[in-house]
Length: 141
Image (cartoon, rainbow, N blue to C red):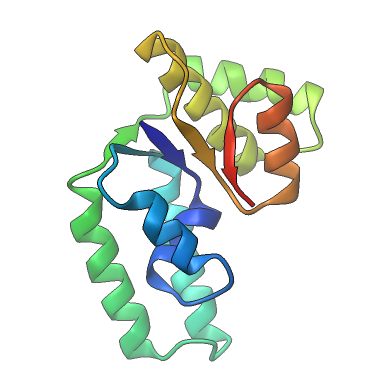
């Protein structure tokens, strides 16, 4: 199973550097995201539309496609275990709160599976560094 944070998921719906690679990484794989990504991805779509980087029509299409994909993906809920891990991560790494939740969700999923994730996909440098320090395999940058 591969875990995708919001910075990677957005690239599935909005053409930007890394989009082709994300689409390849998503293809034919078990995909996991955190519940937080549901909000962060839509926030990115609305910000891009506000900044005129994408049209309102593109925003709405991206949102609809994301909502459809979300039904097929494993969503890691924000449990007390995830928040406890996120708090620990905030003390160890220079992460923002949402980034700590993303890494914590991947770590909690990995622990629950009892085996390493196939990969943690992110495009945020601070998240990459923290994920690697926490022994997650980062597969995209």
